[in-house]
Length: 228
Image 1 (cartoon, one colour):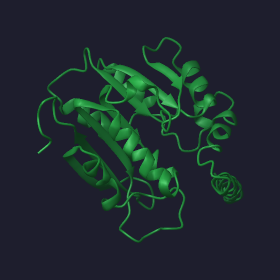
Image 2 (cartoon, rainbow, N blue to C red; image 1 turned 30 degrees about the vertical axis):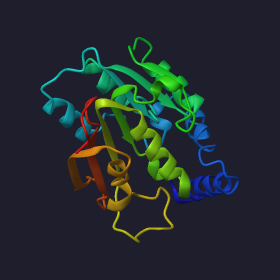
Image 3 (cartoon, one colour; image 1 turned 45 degrees about the vertical axis):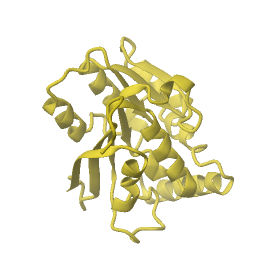
């Protein structure tokens, strides 16, 4: 994305945020791609390597377990979860994103659907053994970040896990940026939401210059056990 296109994009995001519509701009990014995932400027077109590493380290298969991919974008991470035998529901607020995923993976076992994280189906509450969140919270402003985090944590079933991948920052840094990375206190909100931190990695990616990230796993205690 060149400088002019980035300015136009950021102006569009700001206009929607000023109208208290924090995700209204999303669909145009996907519709402008014209069905080609390479046209989605933030898409890596490959699963998150930290997600793949976590899945590879687990001794238990996803067979018979439900997984959710939050804000699934062009579908790479959802397909990775399905490849590890999870029964995957992948959703996005943008209809054009879901249309792109279905076109890209016509024979997929993933249930791709349009859905709103802030108004999910009732059976999604504590309904998933694995909930994967990648870069959704960081595109939201203000109170919507807190609401999104609470909604994501709330989808984790007893004994289940939330995997969270995001850009990171030190407290007080980059306050005017978009997307706004999460600081440590903010991602620790998953613990305040009733989960237990099971793994945490802070790393710099391979961009030039490198961009700092977090990748973390948070677990909910099994039914009948205190979180502790």
